Image (cartoon, rainbow, N blue to C red):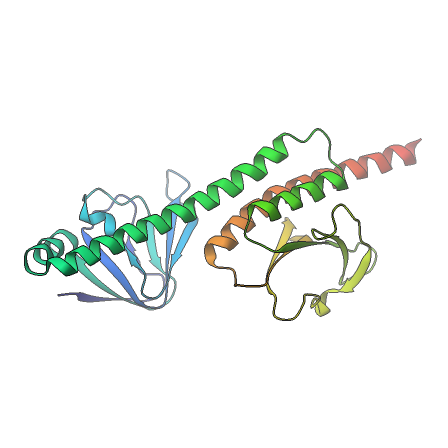
Length: 262
């Protein structure tokens, strides 16, 4: 019933606005889902990764509209595919129990994707709203933003580090959401960046300005690792917070210049 399709790395399964009436199952390796960000199709934004045994393009069951995304093989990838409407019609006629099981699974799959999308949008919206409502920028406001990020995401606590401008290859530990608004000053060597409790899952997000990694947020959990959706939500929010930290740095530099000139 299913047919097999093999892609080599960088092969495009389908591009935006192409027609495709199949449902796909990833058997091995990985695909990336992208959206063009320019009319000339020069740049793309990564929306999602599709891993082993994920089912996708179930929307073909209801319509055969042009594709809204580009899907590319990240590695050599094996797929199974089948004509969506022909398959469902055959199942409905010959195997109604299997058809019902398929319908339940597609509803579950769609719900999971909606929950993931809602998590991404909610996290980004709340952090950006907090940033827009800031009346001033100080360490306290930055810590409040980090506390807010901890509260709206599924993490146990967040640690914040700054690049040490005096000692090369060292970081300054500045904040721990378990100790509200307390400024730390511990200095640690970058190569020994192993300060997390044993068995705690972590996701380290560097906050870069151009090519320099100036700050770090370390997200910590005790119960489960971070999936791609978690990482996207935390990365997007961290980028917004990095902008505020950079603004504070520029304000401090301006104050120092004024002090020197005086």
